[in-house]
Length: 227
Picture 1 (spheres, rainbow, N blue to C red):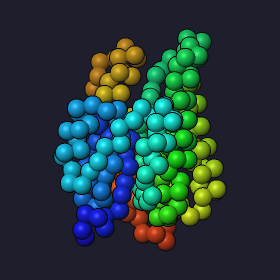
Picture 2 (cartoon, rainbow, N blue to C red):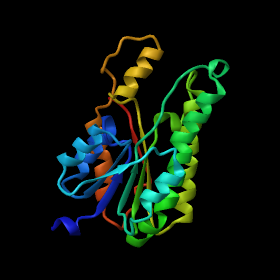
Picture 3 (spheres, rainbow, N blue to C red):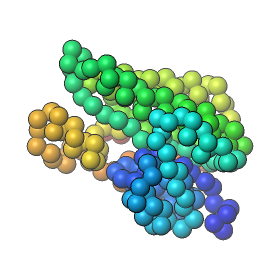
Picture 4 (cartoon, rainbow, N blue to C red):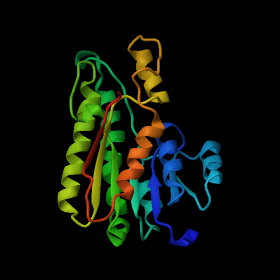
């Protein structure tokens, strides 16, 4: 398959962690748009993949995102991976943390999807939303984060119903060995350990499998828990 004939996939938060693992998993079969803030690291990542291009944006700047999305007339896969996680009991969590997590985990997803809907419709595309186990169950100390991920679940359900020509997959992993998880362990006052954590490559493989699922099936949800 020529480079021009390969389907096009946009992965947000692609410069590290799970996003980078997803990009590497999709690279053999897709041309890549790699989302992230403009940086030398993003430029170096683009150089790693043949035919890749940067999608350099602060996803909370909705006008800039819309301007970047406007020239894209066809998009086969959109992976919403970028996210923000902060923990704390409800009584200790300031309103700013709630706003920040809803802005990154929900509103930026909504606005980017809206901007790319014409391109996704043109290809009968696939939207993949990296959610969390917290998008199905809210535990103590995770109220604000879980609320944002429940919001992401609701958005996926509504999008799936409103856009029957698209496939919409919610991915609900347990804890993953990433830099964000290291920050969460520190906030919990625990020494970091990868025991009981999923590998980013494992979750990325599940994403790629969903994308590769033949078109007569619609993988609506994937739930992954550490063994």
